[in-house]
Length: 259
Ligand code: UGA
Ligand code: MN
Image (cartoon, rainbow, N blue to C red; front, top):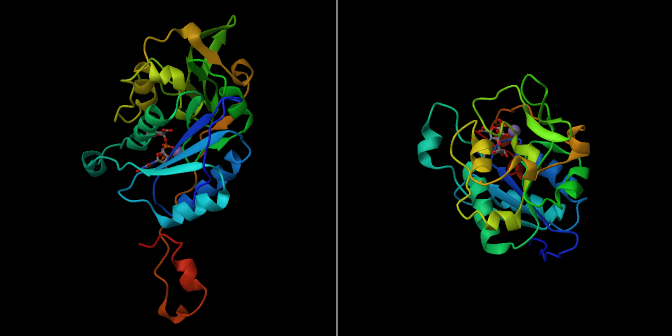
């Protein structure tokens, strides 16, 4: 069973929304992220799988880590699954997380943490006090090597990112947090199913939001505390040869993603 989460007000609670989906790397990614989050107090981890049903192996992994969590599902709509073009990955999952917070949270801060990225726990202590929206640099994004707000004369003065794409907020998913109270004042805020424009669409849906209201973290955006890392994609493991029946490999077999 998950560790029950009873939010306390001090320090403000953190709600970490993590989209995930079944693939050979899934349990490894969740293990790595989970033990990072274990260093962070007063945190609820919302693990939301792009699937029709929860998976016992994921639940076992989350239980073993011992971070308070909710494990929910939110499948990508069929129309997007079928497309040969870029898919809106993790969007139904994140919107499910927003619904959960609207129903269950009153204060604190939400953050979208993809399962494959890398997080310095210092960013969690900084984002906790977000009043509306906070932002900071994210390493390893696009040809510029970093995606970051630009600060000139102490003020937010645009964004540095290798792909601007006509976005008002050319930022990475790992580079911003939003206050739960502020979310409650924006009941229609949602993430669009629009590849490349997920962050921009969500942040725009929080309007009105003045640039001067965006809090700049990570040493006023001079430091990198989150990275958009990617794990090498691994093929599904081959089917277990019958000669291994009645060995430990039968147990291991149940943990692996097979073709
Ligand atoms: C980038 C952005 O960081 C994502 O936030 C954005 O959703 C995605 O591009 C996009 O534009 O589609 P990237 O690293 O390229 O992310 O994508 P993934 O890491 O493969 O997926 C992002 C998140 O969605 C992950 O947490 C992943 O577990 C989840 N995901 C991915 C699903 O739930 N379903 C999928 O089919 C694929
Ligand atoms: Mn990723």
